[in-house]
Length: 46
Image (cartoon, rainbow, N blue to C red; front, top):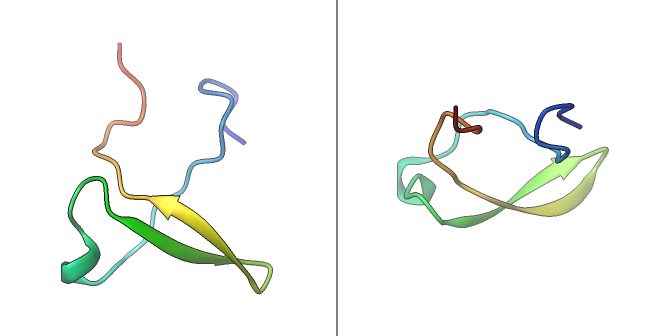
């Protein structure tokens, strides 16, 4: 959990076909598939 945006954030490597901003992907958290969305960095706006 990010203390700044109050949401879970993460970074990782994904395949090129899933790298478009807004793509919905699934990630494994403790062997459980969780829906995630590809967003542009930086995560926060100044």
